[in-house]
Image (cartoon, rainbow, N blue to C red; front, side, top):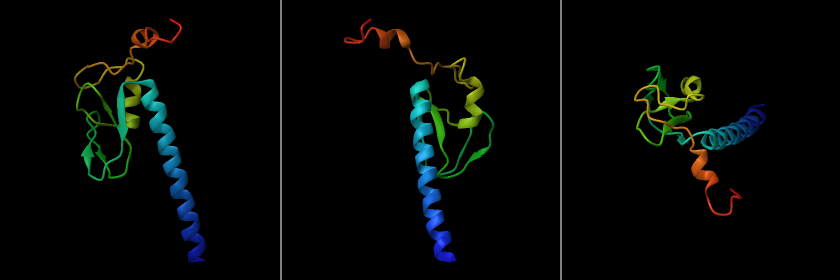
Length: 103
């Protein structure tokens, strides 16, 4: 029975990694942010809650504030850091002006 649990646990861990990677790609495609996990504890800059090791966290590229994914989501539409108000919105105009983009 323990071998079955271990095999299931390995499958669950692989699924969790795939889910985290998909979430990371999606968030990074929606904003100028770095999505990563770390082996250390940090505090979420919005809520003050601890971010445990291995948990995905989000950091706008233009500042050093780190957030739990769920704590930054309410600010995504506005695209600004809730602490220092720097923008993490993608600049679609500069992307449209790239050569070969048909713009």
